[in-house]
Image 1: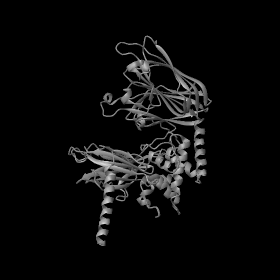
Image 2: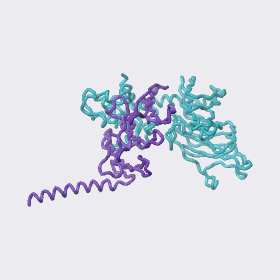
Image 3: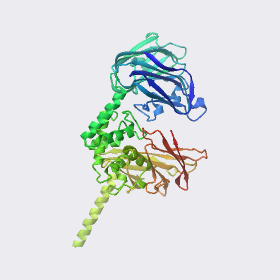
Image 4: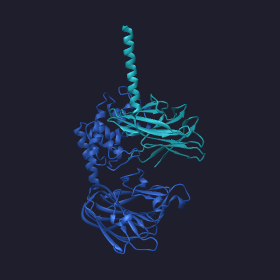
Amino acid sequence: MEQIYSNNTAKTIATRENFELHIAKSGVYFIEVVARTKNEKQLHSTDDEDLRIEIDKRSFPQHKGSDRLFDSPVSFSGGTTKNLKKSVGFLTFLSKGKHEISYIPDGSATIHNTTVSLVDTNSDISMLTLSTNDDAEDGDRRAWKTFALIDASFQSFLLVLTLKRRKMDSDDVKVVVDGEVKKRESNGFRKLWYFISSIFLGEQQAIIFSDQKQKGLHYIELWADRMPTFNSITFSGLSFLPSPEAKKTIEEMIREKAIEFGLDPELMVRVAMVESNLDPNALSQANAKGIFQLTQITIDQIEKLGYKVENPYNPEQNIHGGVLYFKWIFDQYTGDEKLEKTLAAWNWGGGNFPKNDPLDYTKMPKETRSFIKKVLQK
Amino acid sequence: MKRLTIVTIFSLFVASVLLLFVIQFAQSADNDTTQNEEVKTVRFDLDLDGKSEKLTIVSTLNSPGYETTKVFVNNALFPDFSLSGYFYRAQTHIIREGDWPILEFQLLTGHSITSLLYTYESGRLKRIPISTENSPYYEGVISRTQPKFLDVNHDGSLEMVVSYSSFTSDEKKQIELYSYQNKSFVKYEEYEIL
């Protein structure tokens, strides 16, 4: 790995900070951020400190549970880390040129370290080892390290950790992959803690997890109890969807689907841009998902139109469903304002304004007007 | 004789329709999903008498964009209100200590969330006007994000904080602050944030 950027100066931030990263060579990069966030008790407050990271304005929601981005495994939540250091490492394909890393605190947060390393100029890597020998700070059960694999697939990963037996309470590590806690039945009542210190297992333990993950956003979380040491993680069969090509592919997929349904391809790309910035993993407060921000109700309606969106984060399904839904609305209207009415219905629901009367912008919500304006680039 | 028969048939018809209507809603379980209709029941103590009011919410898919929602209070035969949109969530907020809670009722309308606010008066839900620019045509907040209720100015009562234009491509968000005065929410400040 070739380190291209490192900042080890600790800095406490209270507002969003953006860092511009200049990438000379396209390839797979490892971006690691180490930070601390305090809980409300430590702050003598009613709110914890939190921090989340965006890369090129892309946010990283969790796969299960809360929609709150600060609760994602790739965020730093003071409620769980209690001012102990946590590291989050992103593995992602970055194209040559400018990129932006954004640090977004809730309250404040202290960033200790950011490093960026070029892993490989190829998007397919048969084996990748990340080794650091990183000791956890002493503390009770909390989120310790997360690896986020962005638009990547992999066959398996090997974790090597060192766990010591200590007085009163020994080192343990919990492994969570895409929200699923890995269980080890032989650990008895501690089965949720996959790695436990044991005289039989030895101090250094290595386990292979054969998870075979398809292309997508994947999180591997390590939770620590006391002071385990992270030695390494080795991924096999890693493959990344190169980001510029991914965006191009999504745009192309939208154009193709729009043409298939007899719609203006550039219009549909603009709708998707406004909705999600073409992010297949975008998640809104209304639990709207993916490129066309499909809610469960929209998905149910799409099913009634004859297409089942099983996974709204799947670009192909989301685009097919989104374009089909748009086409159905588009066909409901006639006349000069056909397109404006379609966009108003998409944004606000067709039942909220008269179908056959001219659109009354004074009776339209601010956000609907804004949506129409953005899509039509007026 | 003929007139009596017509009256009898008409009475039987009206009785049957009423009976069907009663059966339909009496059978509404807490969460019952039929092909196009979903029935949910939520309970809130809206008048702080120690007994929860039961809201039966019936949302129907209809065709895309034409979803509808009816709300029945305490097993009433007729809905307290009917709305355009599909039920998303309901919650209560106590604006000032000692006041009855207000009900925040949210619907999915297209790709937006419509948030409507109600007080409970004389056994019925009454819409709280919100001084949006077009009130009273729609007296709710329509946004991609949900309003928050916070004591922004530390006066002991909650203000409503609304965030607009929260598309992912947006650099700026518009924030509006509303205070609760004389049974309506009145906008008193708006600004933009990055």
